[in-house]
Image 1 (cartoon, rainbow, N blue to C red):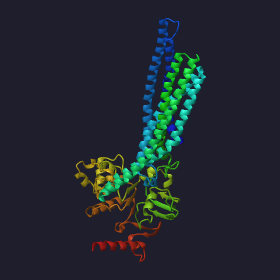
Image 2: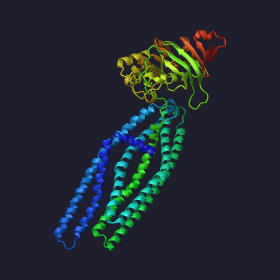
Image 3: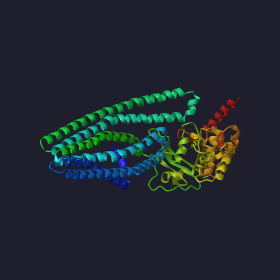
Image 4: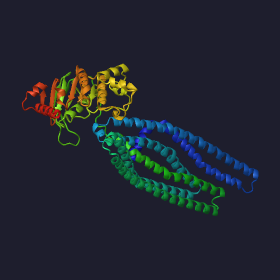
Length: 588
């Protein structure tokens, strides 16, 4: 709760004027509500005045009535103003929270994203946003006036009848203390668990729907149904316990309210019997109690709403407080890549909790404009090599330099914007083909986008589509074939025209008919820039300037295809011949 309130207060401070307007209007409206019972008592006394003419009694009653009407009108106007000002406050906070949380989540480390359900993260953000709206309403429009009513009513009653003030004060304190204790220590733990399972539902739904093609491929709809039924069942049990605790707490609060009401009415009768209060005073006491009762009754609901809001914001605040992982250093400057030389200088690296480092004192230089292939068994360190160049992870020792600039000392945006990536499994946005290709260079013209598509051998299939470049590709590009997705990724890289290019077997998903055309286009793309190619099929690296053979995190061999093939017991030769033999065997 402390963390949630601190988070909320930071956003309130950005809108101090709005907050002051809301608080001022609500407190004045509430004070008018407190004064109305006082004048209702005076109205009753005016009607019961003994020894006065009816005209005098009517005059005094009308005065009290006029004040009551004025107070009521003022209360309505002020409350309307306060509620209207809450709208820009809550919408502004919700907008800021959505934008800031999204920006923060976008910048979390690769490891964080690999270990998180996107559906669960979205649920945390959206649920937290709406919880902010409820939190503002509860604190500013409900609990603030309730606290003011209880304090001011107790003071007004205690000034005339100390015993009555004591009854109201003790009853209010007991009620609020019980309500807060139930909310924090009885309901909150159960609500936190039910919210966690609510988040799991979002993650389970997103996981199954995002992989629907796999579900259909294996006829696994019933399995996914059963998986969701299991999660929903556990959520239902947790939620039933939470709601039962809410109900029990509500009943307890009604018992306390009944006790307060009975005690207060009894004290009022005793004061009247002992000539310490007039009938108008008793009317004032009872009317005041009805006001206090309404606020007290609502306090229970508001405290529960507050507790629910806090529970629902907890995961959002945890997102905000989670470490970014890879951050720009203070004083980071934009990177300027000219030649594109990449140098690993005594680099050491290990993943997270892994005790054994992947790299120890790894040193290698890739000259600017050089085309280099990375080969080796799975897990040998090829992919990590290119991820470190992009600074998706930080090295644990040594440094990585591009044109003499340490990648840790430049802004990540400037670094990655000058490195074009073509992954083995291309990822596309559920946007138009033009937008997906244009992602490589914001602001590119339609002519530039089409030129890039032609270079990637994608223009022809795009032109055949009913909406051409304005065709939506579906989530993660599901409407396109694997080869078509790969060509769109290649077109994006052509358009980016970055000085450093990373390809993860960029032609592996293409059919044999278009592979030759794309390979020729890739050859053109490689010219004049530093290119690093992660090769799974070794035939694709034969024409490269240099090949680095990785083995258990070290570079076991380094040379051209011809040089490495001349080593009788070389790892590269062994890998190449084995793969060639597998291909011949498959052909036979």
